[in-house]
Every structure is written in structure tokens, then in C-alpha cells.
Image 1 (tube, rainbow, N blue to C red):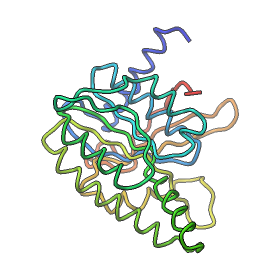
Image 2: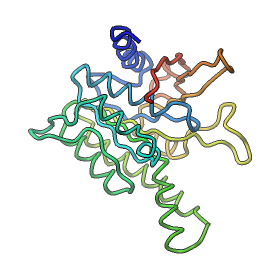
Image 3: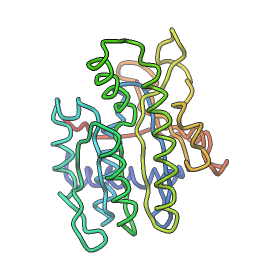
Image 4: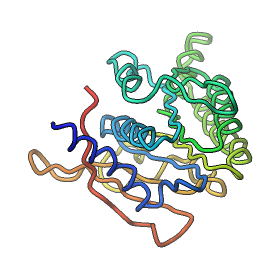
Length: 247
């Protein structure tokens, strides 16, 4: 793809987020972008971070999904944005991998408390449940992971409340990537509910958007849809997403 056209597509993603109420360059917001596995959430958010970095806005990518390292996606993202950004008079690493609650919380607090303007992507909040599930299973040998899921949901809600205080007087956008939660026994088709923690954190969340694929074969289209927004005029807005694959 010619470099000029590639640059236009990168700019279009940031512009599209603005048009959908999912980003504002002079305001703060906490957003949730969710969808089925392998629908393109990482690709979308990586190109969003790249587009913002090209505007001169510090863009941070915090990976928690093991697959981001296994298949080299995190390395690709490292090549898409600068290695670090200066916030609060010091350099803050732009791309990191964490696999537990506290390192993620510390990183987000560092970004939201130090940067006057920035965007941070957590990809994904759902993966923390898998990390904790593995630790729980290794320590106990038990498969009843419901307490872990509850802990993750409570943590996400609490973390949102903590960083909301930091971003209130700044221009910082935080994006939680999450996998959608289908009804028990159902596949990832239709219009499932957003991740449950998103609903409990709505008083701090600015918007919730779903990425999905409609159509089949050569007619398949990737669409981003606003399913909840603090301002009603954005609810239901949907746009087709054109993104270049990471790998």
C-alpha cells in the first residue's frame, strides 16, 4: 500500500473515533471497546494509538494478552509508535506487557497522573481473568473460577474509579479492550451485552463500543458501533472500519 494512502487511513481512524464520540483531543474520557475473539480489536486500537502518536499525542499500549507476545503483535506495535513519551518531565515507556493487577494499576496511574495529554490502551482487561485463573488453578487444583471472575470485575470497576480522579482535569483518554460476553450456551452472534463491569462502571465510563464483523466471504465488513454513550446523540452510531493488519 502506498505510504500516502496508509497515512490517510491512520488519520481516518482517529478522526472516526472523534466523530463517534470515542475521543476528544481537548477532553478526558474512559472508554470500553469490546468484541468477539479475533475480530480485530488489537489491530484497531494499535492503529488508533499510532494515529494519535502521529498527531504528537503520547500514546501508550499496555498488553496483557499472552498472544500479543506469542505472535509478535506487541513487537509490531513497538515499531508503530515511539519507544517512550515525555510526561511530567520524564520518559515513560510507551509499550509494556503486564500479567497482573498491580503492575497495570501502577502503569495507568503513572500515565494519568503524569501526562497532561495522552491516550492509553489496555489490551485486554479480560486477559487478567485468564492470568488469575491460571494462578488459582496452579495453587489449588480447583476449576471453580467464579470467585476469580468476580474479582476481575470488581478490580476493573475500582481501577476505573481511581483513574477517573486523575483524568478529570487533564486531556487523557483510557481505552479498555474486552471480549464480549455471549449468553450461556450461545455463540458470538447477534447483539450480546457489553462486559458486565462496563455496566457497573458507567458513572465513570464515557462510552462503550462494539467491534464486529457483518457479512461473509468477500462481502464481510468490520464495523464499530457505539452501544452506550454518556451523550445520547452518539448511541447507535456505526461506521465501517478500514484497518491494515498488524502481521
